[in-house]
Length: 491
Image 1: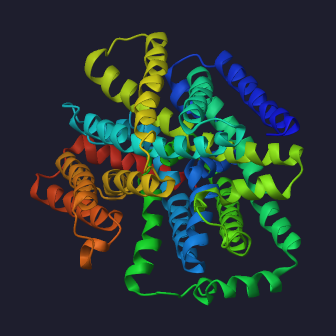
Image 2: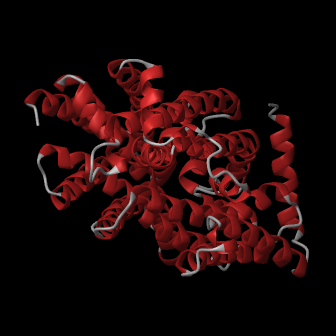
């Protein structure tokens, strides 16, 4: 590895450390640590939500999928964009208002707990356990991606895995939500620029678009057609990824952290523009990679962006591009670890065991939780068959199916009850797990597990609520008050 590349890369890491130190100095209580004191401006909330969502999947997984299968993978980012629009347009504002009214809830499990005045704590603990389980897989996917990058510095996979984990844990441990959100804003900007620059430069260096397309056709014209192997099942499986935006807690918490509802429209426009263009860049990276690397044997499809960074750019720019890859990974993992430790600290430790714990104690429990969660994800990532996109797909489905139906119902259905929420959470989570481990992968069982999980989770919410007695007046009065506030705040 060139010395200049290493200097550029480490300079970026030094900047991240400085951000964490500043955030540490102004983190005074648990609300600051897990929600930033609800002080995120529109642009920061937008890029933080987008960057924390994309993970290693954006620069590694998506280009790899396009490299292998061709342009029929574009339906996946289309589904994600539609899902993000629905979430920002219809979920963000009600959740921001309702979560603050419902006892100033700091996490999504806490919001559902307070929405139904659940004295038993079953909702909060159930969702906290779901969060910890599925985020372990999500975090492991990012650690695998980070190790793939750091291997370029002449490290073994295990050494790279350990180093990447240490870097990410360190600044999340110190700075909490503010450090995560501020660095997500900067890293999201860097990711955006690099995703547009790499395919443009690669196409130019190859000799232009026409030459590249004709070369790709030689390796299989099916890769040029977005409708290759196209049927209802493929479309449904790829578009269904958009359902994740209704239930993934590390994205929903950004809505809760926005400073005011007036910041949401501009945040929505920024985030959707960022997402759309970034995913176009990722698709083009994988597409151009077909022309460059199809003749090579034993190539890891998920390393296409890394290979371009190393081969097409000067050592200094390669260091910046490697930093962009690490940015993508860090944006996701830090948010996932923070959501997990928030569930552990606020929803289990504080709610069930230490209701009178001091703010300082809770912050330190959260920091220790980050280390424990990272250690579990590290062990999972060491599995030799770990794949970024497979780990992400399973975690994304599990979180969406368990959180999504209950969150949507809690925000929009006055008749929903506590038992309905519990049924939806458990049915959604269990369905995803069972669907994944069933050995049959034909017919209906070839559907992406997010689909049956979300459907059965929704049925659980509806049937469980209708079979239960109507909610108490305290619950319906809070619902009515929340919606009055939502309507009064305008668009």
